[in-house]
Amino acid sequence: MLRTPRPSRPLRALAASAAALVLAFGSAACNSASNGSSGADGEKDGAVRGVTADTIRVGGIVSMTTASGYSKKDTDLGARARYLRANAEGGVAGRKIEYLGAQDDGQDPARNMAAARKAVQQDEVFAVAPMSSVTFAGAEFLEQSKVPTFGWGTTPAFCGPKYVYGFNGCLVPTPGGTLNQTWPEGIAKVLGGAAGKSVAIIANDSDAGKFGIRTFGLGFAKAGFEVAYAKPSVPAASVPTDWSAYVKDILRGGGGRAPDAVVSVMQTPNNIGLFTALKRAGYEGVLTDPTDYDPGLLAKDATRQALDGTYVLLQFMPFEQDDPKMAQFKADIKKAAGGKDVPLNMHMLTGYMSADLFLAIAAKAGKDLTPESFQTAAAGFADTGTLVGDRAEPKGQQESFGCGALVQLKGGSYRVAVPFTCYPPVPFR
Image 1 (cartoon, one colour):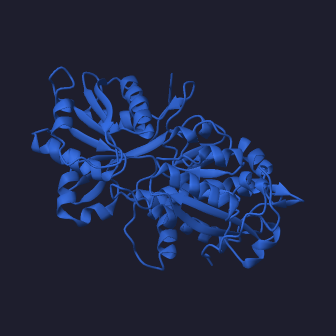
Image 2: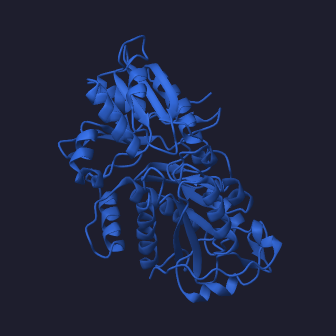
Image 3: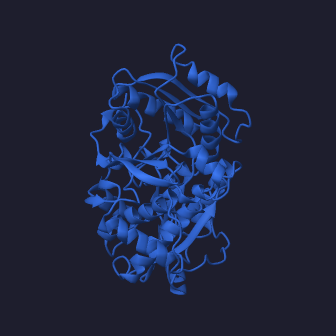
């Protein structure tokens, strides 16, 4: 049974500040192996932080609330669903997962850092899975503490560090890595080819937004598009009330010619405002973003109309695709939701697959689970045919797994516009 987090224990020594997080879900017996403080390697006197003979303790960090109103709260439900099934199947090498749930960082860097410290120093977890926020300020602390951390690799922190893993790989690589071409190649298919076509790319003025502009700009150019406009110009902390200046820039970005596609690297509230303004200005080209795959958005007429026709990038198999793995995901979510049919969204799958990758590597590490044995297992990990395609580490810390799809919201429902496909990555320089 999933448990709520135990009351925080007082800090016992300075060494605890560098301890490693540990995955957990289970009984009160888990206290026995974590009574002594541990250093940066997560071990002291033979005990491993967050690991007992019977349990592994795991926590999460998720932007459940934000200033804009955007929420990733269902990431937590997705992780719970996967851990519930793992426990029902016997756990990992005989240990049940004690999942403490996700802390809300409010999409604030200071709160993200505080959540990371709490997870290590007070909750004493072995791993953080999921971590889903565009403000991953706690990344360096978790890395130094040797805490396996799994989440949506949309920030540079998921590309390079040894203990941080993207569930579908590194999506914003450093030079020398590769780029996932799902979005550019998918839009090329929608437009009947990239030759002679132009795109405008817009993002928030944030670290994630700036990297998104750089990486997706390069990706669309390599696919054969003219990148007529590419700016991280929208405030990250608040949604503009007047989009006219942005629309004017976008529509005139290509020498006075409107682009064939507007690519928004932003979250839902911004997309609603931007796409509505573009439509009112008479824009008839392709609108696309990576976040609006959420049946909950269809509940309001205004939202449904604003996003109608939008193509949404998915870096996982669409819910509409007929596949046994997707059927398993849906069944797991329903069970975690108390047997209720709940509207599915991409955040559920983010949490689910973050937990799934952690579980797969932990299973390979086996009974002798330590931060070091976990890393050894990860160094040679590979599997195939998952909801995000073929996975491999440490490849996923340098590049994405290269797979994805496009769905289109049309007439109040989603349809698969470009089926789940894996594309050859391109070099990022």
